[in-house]
Image (tube, rainbow, N blue to C red):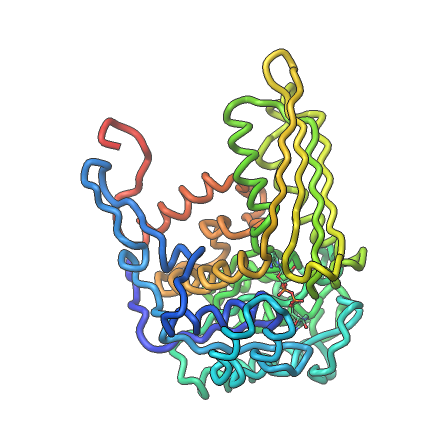
Length: 431
Ligand SMILES: NC(=O)c1ccc[n+]([C@@H]2O[C@H](COP(=O)([O-])OP(=O)(O)OC[C@H]3O[C@@H](n4cnc5c(N)ncnc54)[C@H](O)[C@@H]3O)[C@@H](O)[C@H]2O)c1
């Protein structure tokens, strides 16, 4: 494989400079200053086994494939509020104020560009830092102009875009999403099934900029964008960062299944008080998140193949907006399982997590791995990055893989493939 080296500066563009976006950016500056380590990031801390087990060779992933150095990154983004990254991070109250003071000059310098936004897709947001345009195509062109200006101003060699904006109202794939021509006509005609997030996606993919979708919005998960990605040789991946409760689900469910234990109920509830929680408090926006969260168990457990174990599974997911908790989400799971002779048992999980702390390293890894994919000449849906996503995008006719351990195997073997190393099949004595 002809892999280009990560030379020059990489620009990471972020639509949505809220809790996740600012925690990510501030984190990279803190790491560059030696204040902290990049905990939770595989591109920075992960190792990979190469060759046979007996060779004891486990180098860092970043040394095997060449990952963009954190010191050579420029950050940019858009938001419906005009707060700079320092102000927005202070508002989000995720990171310690003393840390943010220390990073103030760098963070203050990043000011959001005017957003492409329409309140009817996120009713609880009242921002005014918004672009005007005759139609959605004109708005897409304005984004492309922003991108060109950013690239020139920051002297970037390459760019990637990671959507960290809000979850929009639920939209199903329709006619307008089927081909590039129909999507472009829809942009000119202001079609209602093209939400703001898809306008950013179109702009990025049209320009050949790798794109990751951190929210459950349709975004790049439609045939027209997949086709455009092939045409412009662009890697894309979505959707919805796999962080708290769903991360736990995709760790635990494969474990129970592989031991042939039955499950007849999985009740998941969350309280969350950040802006994301406020947006999700609207039923139309919650529906988008619910669909993304519900698919996971069905795909892992395959009740159609294991009816005795999973056919009666009752799966419920709730998210409740509860301001006092801010970004400190609490997620409870009650799992009703059964074992030998149908004897019932229960598992309880109480995950006191920090949503944006879990999501920030995912933004970094998705950005750097997408840049790697682009340098390796890969394009279209990057299924090997499903590892990071709650509702992974899969090619038409194929079910997504949710099991985190299968996702890990796929990710590691793809890295070996890019590096020109032997794939590991776990067969034979030496393995
Ligand atoms: N934190 C997690 O663990 C996690 C996990 C999975 C998915 N997500 C998703 O990531 C996204 C970001 O989460 P967050 O906690 O940072 O939310 P947030 O509300 O703090 O930040 C989102 C930001 O996006 C901005 N925005 C909304 N629409 C926009 C548009 N059209 N253009 C530009 N900016 C826009 C909002 O003004 C806001 O500042 C959400 O969609 C959330 O559902 C987060």
